[in-house]
Image 1: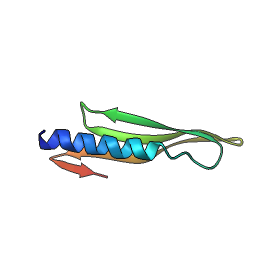
Image 2: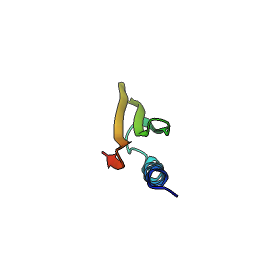
Image 3: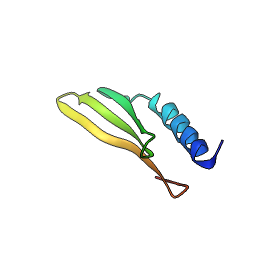
Image 4: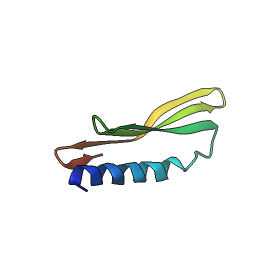
Length: 70
């Protein structure tokens, strides 16, 4: 396994683990976005907390120049 594939699998594994944690408030879901073609990975919080809309990036990781950028 080359270095890039190793980094991809590590990032995917970590984000999948973190996506299992659900917020303790509102009806909020955590979505995973994995773009292996451009090496961009995100976790998004999407939903509602009472009357307020929740939408935002919780974690954003990029792989560039054989490095993982947080």
